[in-house]
Length: 259
Image (cartoon, rainbow, N blue to C red; front, side):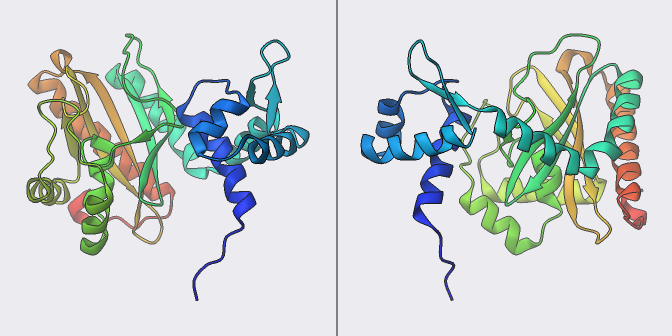
């Protein structure tokens, strides 16, 4: 039997999700145009969300922004991410050791989402930020997760993913991507070599749960010029060790090929 969804709730969710990709404030007219719904329909949804604290209105320009209720819910969700609590001290050790930025992402409904980011001592302005979704085909974390999915799932994800090139080094051919995924499985880590951002190189490794499923990934991001051959070898070793330590703390039983 097909799932049944409540249209009014879906529309309310659509309104809230507009703020993920739009300006911090939106007017009723802007929301109406973006969603293709009448202003009267949008007005009713917005007023309900405002009443419940999910939206706030700016009295100066009458535009709306996300409300504190979402902040409360976000903190609640954050506190439930045991993997974040487990990974944070390990990530701190990595930053201190490698002196570079370290990320933690989770895999959710076919997407990769950054949930932790610890900056290294040297500033690095890059694509990632907490809460942002990452392309799965051209980021180290995305490929680390993708490589350890079932073959049917890989085909499905690649079919649904927009395999657009972010740089001249981005792989967009499915056969080539799948060949690279095989190498990642064999070595237990992945590398993003300027595939999403020129001058940036990332090393990532998968994180397994107690069922042996990949649920997350950890990575080290650095300007390519700082990743000499010797340092790259160190980064690979430490990222793999960190991912394995987090996995063990999540109840994963070590597989020799990944150790």
